[in-house]
Structures are given as C-alpha cells and as structure tokens.
Length: 130
Length: 219
Image (cartoon, rainbow over all chains, first blue to last red; front, side, top):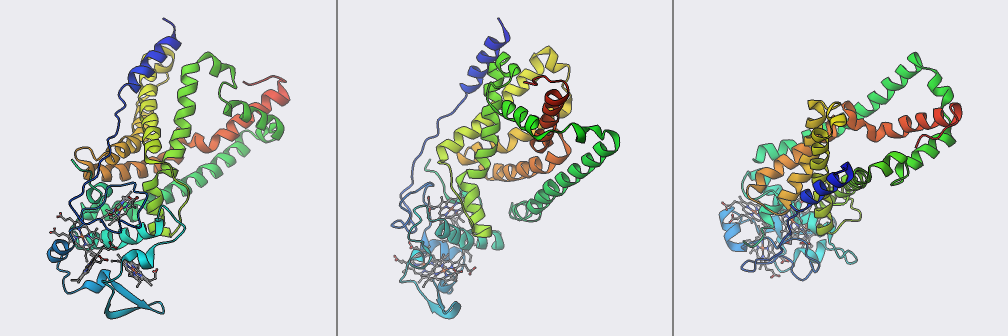
C-alpha cells in the first residue's frame, strides 16, 4: 500500500470521530428580551427574575439593572422597570445585537465575577436543555 | 474559579499578547542582526520578483512538486492552516468578547461552521502526530518538542469544541481553553511556530537564490 492510500485511510478514520451537535432550547424560565433577540445563537439564559434577585439580595436595588440616565448621567434613585433593556440598549440595524448582548454580559457576568457567585462561563448561563 | 477566571482573562491575557508581539519583534530584530553579521550575502541575493514568485507557488495548493507528490498531506496542511486562522478570529463567542472589552465587532462565522473548522484543526493535529510517529523519515526528525507543540496547538481548538457543546466539566474546560490559547500565542515567537512570520522571508530568500543565482525553480 503506498503512503497516499495509507494517509487517506488514516484521515478517514480520524474524521469518523466527528460528532454531530444537537441543538435544543429550554423553556421554563423568563426569556430576556425575547422580542429583540430574533436570531438566537445560544439558548436563553434561565433567568428567574424574583428568585434571582432575592438570592442575590437585590430586592432593594432595582435600579442597579433598571437604571435611568439623564443627559448621560445616572439618576440615583429612579428606576425604569417599565422598560426593557433593549429599548435603550438595542441597535436597530444590527440583527445580531452585539451591543445589547455585550451590555447584558457586562451587567450580569460583571456582578457574578465581583461577588464570586453565579455563572461566568458562556455555557453556565446559556445552558442547553438536557 | 472566579479568581482564576479573573486572572486568565485579565493580566494573563495581556501578558500573552505582550509576549507574542514583543517576542516576535525581538526575534525579527535579532535574526536580522544575525543575518547582517554572519551572512550579508542574503541581502544582496534578495530579489522581490523571484521572492514573490516562489511565495505565490508555495501558497497555491498543489503549486509545488512536493505537494503533488503528497496530496493528502497537502490537503490536510492547507485546510489546517486556513481553519487555524479563520476559526479563532471569526468565531462568534470571541467577537462578542471583543465588543464587551473594546466596543468593536466584525463579521462572524455561523456556530456550525466554526465548530467544523475547529474539528478540522484538531483532526489535522492528530494526523500530523500519526505521521510523525509512523513515517520513518519524519520520525527520524521528530523530537519531543514537536509533539508538545502539536498538543499546544490542538488544545485550544479541542477545548473550544468541548466548551461549545457543553460536554461534562465544561466550566473548568473554559478555563483550560482560555489558558491554552494564551499559551499557544505566547510560544509562537520562541518556537518553530514563528514560521507564520518567517515564511515569506525564508521562502522569499530561497526563491531569490534559485531564481537569481541558480536560475532554477524552487517548487
């Protein structure tokens, strides 16, 4: 058998190990900004709003996430629960919503890192349904 | 977990970029000086047209005789190198991180394509490894350093696939993924991986000498 044939066989054997990914979504939890993220690439984060904020001790601090800004300055004790984050943070002509995604990651992962509690890796937040 | 994550995505990330860029610059300067001192003729022989001609041939799949003699190796090498660069630069997860840190983003691959490209890199490395231990003429030249480099190159891609599919233990694997990527970047200037920068010069020189002095083809 010449080397070319042997190399080919080797290559085929190696490639045979390719695993096909399976995609699925979980649906029990609040889907954040479902209407804005139309081209989903990752499963939604299972964010259980009240439970999360209770466990994280954020019940008094709604404005940490639901903040309001006036002329570029954070308004200390006013909150914006009646608005979705995307109303201010989404870009209209960006189907992939890079900026909105980055905003969520900064707020959510940022705190988890700081508090050393809560998920910080992609897959730990965007869990695939088992 | 949190402390390690903070360190490897913060100071260590910067360190690996600094070592990569600083080390490469250092290698360039010292190699240039060495060539000036030891072998000044190199600079006289250099000929842009012959250099580019040779580089073009060696960048064309099956453009050199040796590539036609080893078709499987040629296909694997070309797809390996393409995947090696395209996957990490354009995988969606990396571009999102760029947006978070620097407010910039660019075009991205679909996750499926990035997944396949990463596997191409991993399986190519396995192929290179097998070749290194199975073909006598290659085995003869192989040292343990070659094997270690192969592992370091395959590691970020193998762990990337792992993490993307969320296989068992993926949070820890994420750390290994980041760390191994940084390690790969940092060793580039000091190992044969530096051929990513030296290639045009070595090929260009050989092309110049063959074209301008020996009046022969070097492909």
